[in-house]
Structure formats: structure tokens, C-alpha cells
Length: 148
Image (cartoon, one colour):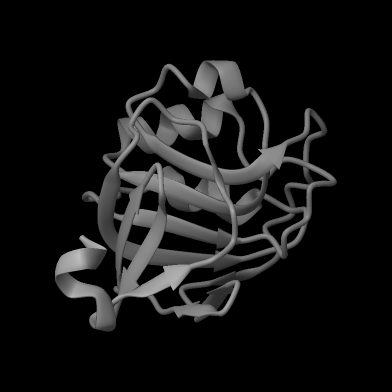
């Protein structure tokens, strides 16, 4: 993809790990900014995804997980293409069996708060790349590209 459209795509330099059973995924972005609280993540992934990719800016924190297997299953059930988390997930073995693209920085078995604190559908940053709601996300085992 980058070879064909390079200059119009932003490449995320943060090094994410792949966790879901879907290695390559794409779709329009929905965004959440939160810190150690997955209440918004759970709520949004329980709504129709229509092939979207949820981009969660957890500030790079690995202190607690922002998604586990039950929330990931909800994303599958509601038609999300993928989830990208600038932070940690848990239940990685179970998530690896789900028909969902998942990228995160790492894992932590600790649960996060569930107060619903954070910001929905604002501009978030992954490294040097700003991502606005509706931007097209292209993810594969080599990384993440953003258009728009």
C-alpha cells in the first residue's frame, strides 16, 4: 500500500504487537483518548462498528489493560474491523482466536478502571501521527498507515 500511495499516507512509527486473528485490517477511524480507564472502550465497542477501526490513545501506559477478551468479543459481535490500543490488553490468547484485528503495545493482566473517563471522537496521536475520526486506517503486520 505504501509503495503505491506513499506521500499521501502517514506511517505510525510506534511499534505495536499484533494480537487478533486478523493480521491485516482497515476502516474508518473512531477515536478514544483515555488513561487506565476502559469504560468508553467497552461502551463504544458495544455499538455497531460497521467495519470501523477503534483507535485508543491510552498514553502508552502498560500499567493496566484497556481491553480484554469479553470487550474484544463484543467488537466482533458488533462488526468492528479492528482495535488499535496505545497501551495494554489482557486475555491475549483468547483474543488471538477472535476474528478481529488487534494491535497494542503489550499485555498486562491488571484490569483498568471502568468510570468512563476520557474523550470520544477527538483527534488522537500515535507517535507523530494525528488521527481524526473518519481517517482511513490501514494496518498489517508491518505497521499502521493513516490517510486523511
